[in-house]
Image 1 (spheres, helix red, strand yellow):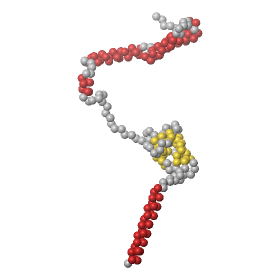
Image 2 (image 1 turned 90 degrees about the horizontal axis):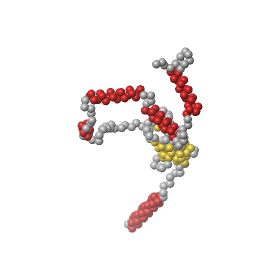
Image 3 (image 1 turned 135 degrees about the vertical axis):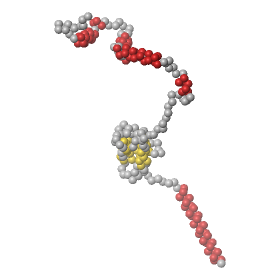
Image 4 (image 1 turned 60 degrees about the vertical axis):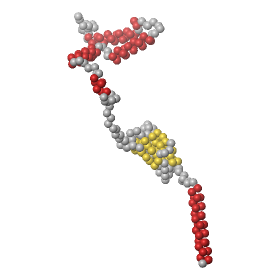
Length: 235
């Protein structure tokens, strides 16, 4: 009987020692920090294009997911920046769906080239009703206070007056823009000789050349007679 108790006591000591050893090993394993495998840094480059038209996408945003580093594509759609093996790179541009690409972890070399083809994004906007006034009940008050002609005769007179004005405008030599340009030219000419006497145009060779050109234009418009005259109209 004593031998049986002694044997059980030895077994309990063995089990206790085994538990203590296991707990110590677990504690040491937990205390050691996890060491990530070393990743190689590579130069990631390529072109960003439209998947349908194959046209380059300029000024697209390219960055590593969850990190504050990236670049922007050039006007030709080219991008290039440093990444690490296994990084997830996001490509974003207005009007296109975001594109995600993971740099291969088992790639070889110090550079990696990849063309990215992005799809266009279709946006659906809700229908918006725009009213002329902030509140619907204000529309009645605005209609009631609207200044309308008393009858159709007054409205017709206003329309006829406007038509006459348009006809007179067509008959004028210059329109509004030409009159404004001519006014600016006159102002510039007056400022050009500001503070000094204006030159006499009678002795200006360029003025005489313009005068002769204008006479020739008038001669062509009226036509010359058989005697070589200016062919001015008779009254």
